[in-house]
Image (cartoon, rainbow, N blue to C red; front, side, top):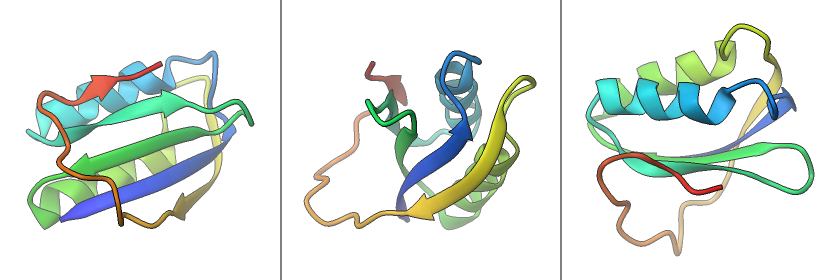
Length: 90
């Protein structure tokens, strides 16, 4: 399963990308996380459906200090293969 989402709220400057990386790596997922200029965090992940769903559930909660207002699904077309291990892009 491949998922690509935009996480909105107070998600930059609170360790969200490292939280996402560690959560994804614990589940053996491929993919990446990055900050966007609009203040959101974008995530692309690939792996077994159950592992991806659990990962998305953790993103909805976020780390201590974050406030997740919304997790919005984005199109996965054109993503190509997602690299292992899960990586912080920027």
